[in-house]
Amino acid sequence: MMMTDRPRILLFTGDGKGKTTAALGLALRAAGHGLRVCVIQFIKNDSTVGEIAAAAHVPGVDVVQAGRGFLVAREDDCFADHESAAQACLVRARQIVASGRYAVVILDEVCVAVSCGLIEERLVLECVQHAPADACIVLTGRNATPGLIEAADTATEMRCLKHAFYAGLPAQVGVER
Image (cartoon, rainbow, N blue to C red; front, side, top):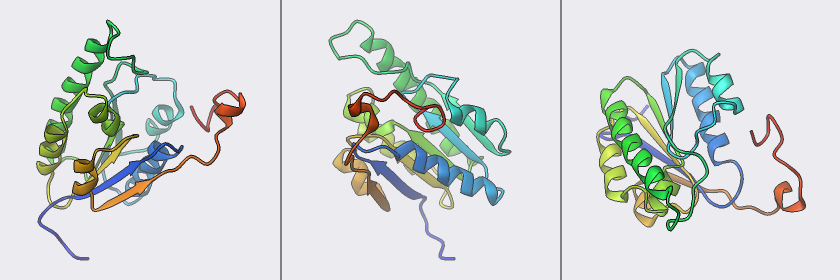
């Protein structure tokens, strides 16, 4: 195995379903090899979703939900709460990344947090730079900025061809929740 002097960075973006799901699959793979994983969710704040319940049964996988849930428009009075939560989450993420405790750190929906102006791209890139060289950092979310894409070693775009939601089907437990 070739070692590098910096962490591996993966990015999952696009308007299609599967960004978080792909990252969680990677978490499961890493845990299967005995590696510690931390999933830090920048936007989500729903403890009833399946990944939270599943992670509780997988040794070495920790999940931190630090968001305020579905984003509101910038003009909404609650936007400042989302901004504060995302900024506090980034501070926590930087501590977790720099600790070296986890082989894999997933910054779930961090691309959304950047593209919506909740946190600065520059600060996310600084956070990633504090990871140990043998770590893997995964960035997920729609609308990845050019700087995040450039920083990634592997960038994948999920493209929506068709989605059940647009046909009026509700989110299904175990699939979207």
